[in-house]
Image (cartoon, rainbow over the protein chains, first blue to last red):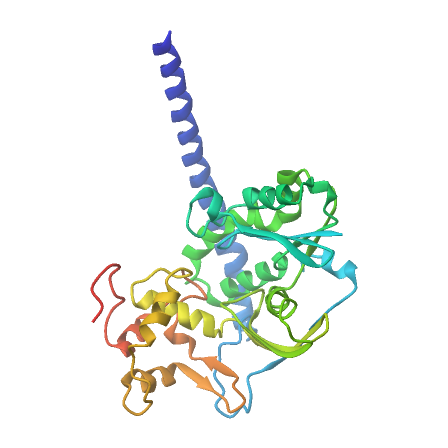
Length: 83
Length: 267
């Protein structure tokens, strides 16, 4: 009886691992498509139109790198937002 | 009034419970799971806090989360857009956890805790500022927060007065003193978000003289510091904005060799 139980438990674990591996492969495949089509095309268009998403340049002539920020207590409704 | 503060899914998940504005219980998840820097949902830490006050989770008026997840996600997507196609590997590794947990954090909190109340999201650097100023003995103080990165902010300053905080200047990602610290930690073959304290300890053995310390001149090429203390990096020395490796080959060449192997002897 315990042999049968062990067999099915092992079988179940094997299938779980197999399912996990399949999901990793499918996720990677779908994410690769999203990356090269979605991110890639947007990035290429942005580069053509000289739009930058990160400010990477060092500017020796600039007097300061501080950016304005206005972070203080707001109405509680604004804290419900995740953005 | 009870407020439960929590953080998770980055490093060192934790929870703190406030009763009428006073911290009455706090714990890190790693203390219960015995996994160092455990970043999983802090269910044990939360249960500990609630048990300490002998209350159920639905007695909590608000749950406060330590950052604004969508703003952080925007920053990560912006990095991938800017650094395409170099960021491919990092994109594959970071997206699943964002899709499964981080972007659905409100429903994850409600489901895991069976909580029906309100969940609030506080900007990361405001949370840092509050965690020091509001428990300090000062009625009024200048506040400086220097972190790896929050949503976009890496360094910020402002003023705290009574129970109000106003941060009014910031340095934005990818320029970050905290991430420079982590990059040097990684370069020395030590683990990021863990061994920075070792680098701090090692600094006592360093040469503090700017004229004789060869690394001072080298690192001045990496960072441009203005007279008001603001700074920006030459990002060609770094990879952390598009990879899970932090120093670039250019930084390794500047510092005189490849990344130190983990566990090798320090000279």
